[in-house]
Amino acid sequence: VHQDFAGDSRFNFILLQKNVGKRKAQIAAIRRSSGDLVLNVDSDTILATDMVGKLALRMQDTDVGAAMGQLTASNRNATWLTSLIDMEYWLACNEERAAQARFGAVMCCCGPCAMYRRSALALLLDQYEAQYFRGKPSDFGEDRHLTILMLKAGFRTEYVPDAYAATVVPDKLTPYLRQQLRWARSTFRDTLLALRLLPGLDPYLTLDVIGQNVGPLLLALSVVTGIAQLAFTCTVPWWTCVMIASMTMVRCSVAAFRSRQLRFLAFSLHTPINIFMLLPVKAYALCTLS
Image (cartoon, rainbow, N blue to C red; front, top):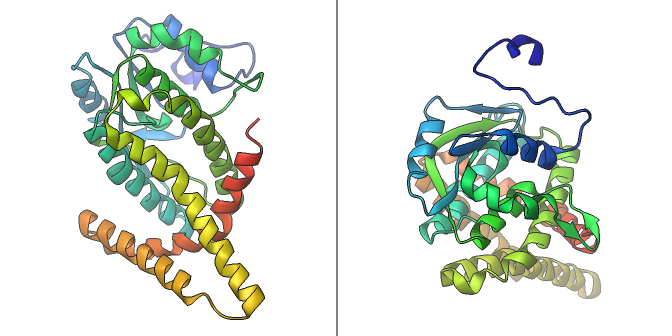
């Protein structure tokens, strides 16, 4: 890439002596920048032609410190897993992020397509660079932490649903679970920081944060209780099975209706992955935060 574009006056390349990770690379670029807005794009992301303009339009409000667009999976048709992840992204953007934005605080502006106000970043870079957890420097979860710092500084964070970006998602379970492990650790870590912000935000955000952290614990408790019933009484926990299946179908049906896409009924396949793979991963992440 450098060889192809080094002679193009539109680009300014910063070549670091070694791979120092995403966070320090971001900081080096931001400190060398001069524009009012900074667009963060991951290396495997393709932007819609009008995406930058739509995010910049939302950033005209000086109270907005960051804005993200809608993520899709560029390889969604590759495997059954990439198709599920694409639907997972749609739900995360058009349910979770959209609801948070309605109350002025998207809790995580995703890395593949997030725009920041450079004057706000300048105030936060030292804190961003010096994130430690239990005495060790943090080298993952950059997007969520930077968003929390923006909210902490008093800026709003927004979601722009018609600003599209497509990113490559894992097509096999092992890299997908590794990704989810990193994200779970980041969520748990930054939730502790976000708790201090909640009294100054809309009460909905408190409900949202509690739900996202307590919900998986309650689901895990239900599953463990059902397994215990099966093991000790040799009876099937029908009530638990029916309740989880009912909630799954309600969620998938609402998503299919809102998106006008019947494919979201197939998102029910994500439930067994969530129960038997993602819940153990989240438990492991909670026990290995440092």
